[in-house]
Image (cartoon, rainbow, N blue to C red; front, side, top):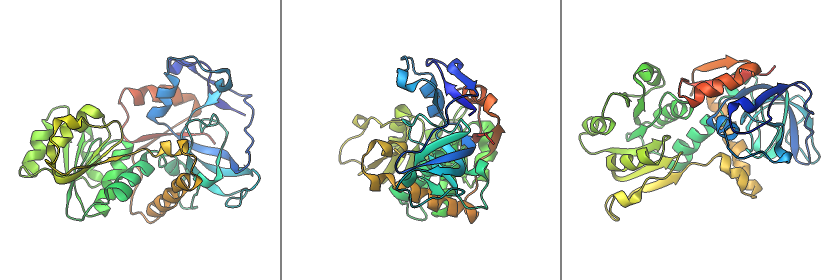
Length: 330
């Protein structure tokens, strides 16, 4: 089969298209999928750029975390899928048969059926960003209507979905993004969008909240940013972090009564608890229902070919992408 493989680690130059990679065969409790579309994610360029040498067992590994397609084959003991079912899923990062190939495999209990009304390209940009946003807003923060949330990166995949889920929950949304993306972020429902490259984000938040701060924060940036966020959380505020914990030494204990939530959708695969892993399928089912009912909309999608994946992973790494990129495999 045709596949984009990681032949050598260390840079994106190690990604190579070959025509003769062996088609993966599903094992017990797995499904084989004919891939129609696969989303691009930071994890892809991070894995390709890893400086260490690849073990022999990982030669010709295929990247691609977000996959949408049609079930092509099923392993033994699979009862929830049959050949011909439309499906989408978040791949285990340790699964060497990712979405940047004509065929992939995944565990049957972590995949979700895809309604006919949802295009493969739309489904392929949901599992990483969309499921993370769902976990943050719906499952972790569980916000009170009428409250205020700060969502960093409103022009990104997680941010765009999170803004919509926050608005569905009745929140006032403040987001950060580049100036060129302000209207894009507001299209998803953000009440206020702050250009982090030219404005003092925290002074602006203080102004917008009359000095009381926000009730919730979704930080997609990193520890330094999350630490600064502590200063604008209201008493009893809650923070969900995707890219690192804040430095809690910067605040006093018994000062604000804060709560912290770690977001780790993909890390669920490191847990041997099948029931816990099955949560991915449950999130997928609920997320596709929201998409089908038009309660949330996909981010701006840039569609590319398999050959263009390395170039667009470079653009993603350089922060030049608004929304999401999806590779059309079939």
